[in-house]
Length: 114
Image (cartoon, rainbow, N blue to C red; front, top):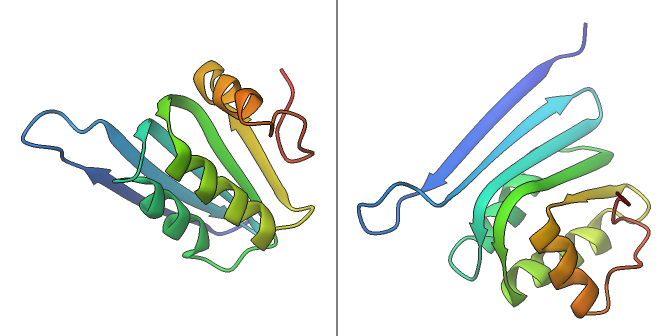
């Protein structure tokens, strides 16, 4: 049975309910990073660092629960694509897909199709 390791991080922004969380789960040589909420300049590096926390050969970045995605988030994903050539899969929410399409990244091999 493969070993599973989980990490979780939430960012509390001003006493309100956290609008960002990230978890990482290792299964063999695959890491799945699940992100929820808003990925912006305050949280993009946390997403990026969580994806690098464990050594892995394959990375799935699950952004299906992301509601906001800005240029800092785009930069973090591009950096992950550079670190994991041919080994990154991004599962986008409709909002993330729209931002990536507008930015010219909608046809990247690492972006999962609906």
